[in-house]
Image (cartoon, rainbow, N blue to C red; front, side):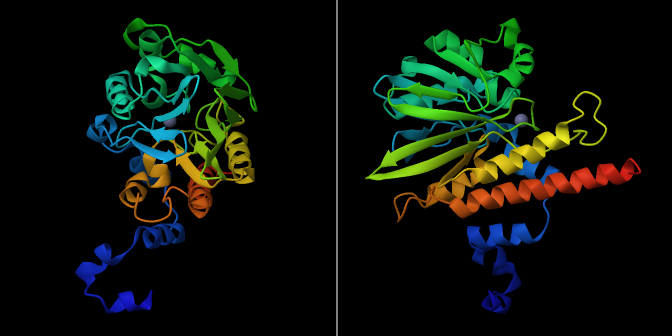
Length: 296
Ligand SMILES: [Zn+2]
């Protein structure tokens, strides 16, 4: 690290590896706004196709530059996690087809949480594929209010914390990780590849959006406890391959650039812990600010 001191200053940003940047980030507390901006990107990035690719085994990325969508292929059909904005559905469809799959083979549609950038497209995906749409019970009211073009939000199965979803030999566990939304869901699955089994966790979100009231919240008095429960629960999961509802949550672009040039770059257990840590630090920052402002 000391050698960096001798580099001309203008070279420093180029000389830093992604890992060093991540390490540097953990030293300074990122604010909820820093993380929000990092995650959501620009409108252009939200709609721009990212090259679809295999993550591990039967798990693929079919989302955009800023909004994640994951595809699981099984002998009995496909599972799609996240439909994103309704306008992103054609982009996801294109990615699914470029990987050689049929969009109409999607049998199950799951989601990260009841915000439009992850689940607004559910009705359109259901219309195009007939997939069974499954959602966490605590998110159902928010999903029912999500009606692009007046279309009611389809929900075929209501899930509860710890429920499993199985298709063609692949099982996902739905973990309730609330705070960001009441029914925010983190998905856990085990993916075999080359004689090994990889633990994958798709973090639903543990971010604090602008305007979130963590202290004296009349609608959700327990919101701070929800977040704390989520940090604790996520930390308790074994994770080899961290993923998230936004690709920046697992530094997809940097990892994708390393694909095929060595070990699978998506294997990153340390990155998983770091992501939880920086979100918890941002939560605590905002919580303490609001506590102080409330005179407590
Ligand atoms: Zn969200």
